[in-house]
Length: 535
Image (cartoon, rainbow, N blue to C red; front, side):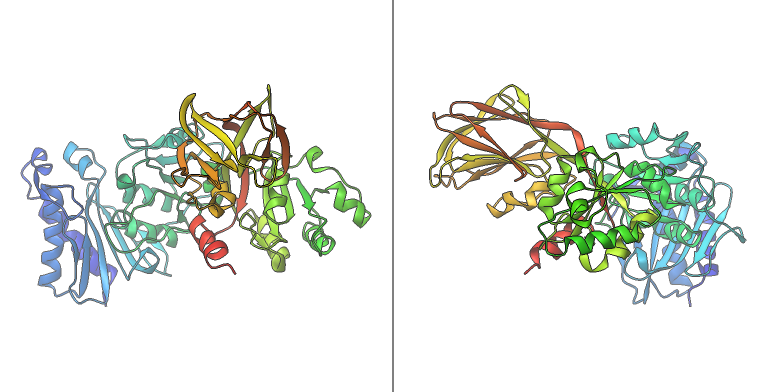
């Protein structure tokens, strides 16, 4: 059985081997191209060779996954996930912050059994065995309770950092980027930092499993967790292809504050809105009220009048979260009337935007009250027509003929440049949120909600060459009705505005956001469950 002592001995071999490098300048010599397609430095290769030689000499039955050599099948039941030198640029530059990282497990990050990280500058050793806690030099370590007035965060702000990483740095007291992921995650595990964040705009610069496998197990055994940017617990397969942005924290509330902007201290006031046309609207609303017992909440006037309780129209609610009972259309209707966060209870059929099933209302509300959720922001679409702004749209805005079976002639401009002309029943301007709705039913592709783009989709175009196209979300899209015949502007299927012939409508990014409360399901799992596999 492979043990922590085995990994410690491997680290000894690495330490002894790199001590043979004559001087600091030689450490960074590029001597070959690694399995990941990037140049391999002398210190990395010597460290990796030391590990491979130890495994052969001692006949240790482990497969190997390493940055330089890739995957080596040695007929082992488990794999050694290896970063021979994490922080090799630091080592080359003479900065005292680099490690050897050794993890043992099966298949993926969730299958890690052992983790061992050694600071090759001062000799500090960190290790964990699944289910047995985390240790530094033999002493137990654990994450710390956060002080939100003085957060200390390890935050990647290098060349490929996303703009959100710089915004995050402004939210905390201290932000550092030290160039050694394993040791920075360890700082969270031992309670010297509150979080480790990597948000790269370049996929190839995101984290790989070899970078973090050992330290993630140590973090988890110390009481912390690591998430992707959607709030899902991070799991990565044992290969060099998959990469991910990540946030490691000692306390989930730190993630919610840093990534989702959720206030960690504030208690929420809730609103309840129900579509009174669904058969069990009163029953579902009563279940929500029962689950919110003891909380501060108000009920929309329409359902309140039916139930004989005091009510407030949703547009007048001073609340933080609106719990919406109904289908996707009901959620969209509420989002036109409030800037509060929303969470849906699916009282309809598909319920793509809803989060709580009607058969588990109490469980869903209990989870909401515990704060066990993430906040997903989606941009809204603004419409300008006839000298005024209309209501914002979450899904889409569309223009179509006001007469049955009568097509219209449209010109589409992007930033005042003519993009195309078409004869069709209408035109949809869709957000990524709306791409799984009306736009998709017309054959357009659906978009990941992280994509900041708008999609122009013809409705029953006369020519097959009239195709959907995508533009940046920052673009202004103008639709001109060429003929002197009326059309209709429809916003999220909720509101219709007559449009005169020979007029134009402008569509642009709104400065407001739709804020959805989410539990665990990521976008593509939601697509598979509610769209692809739906009856």
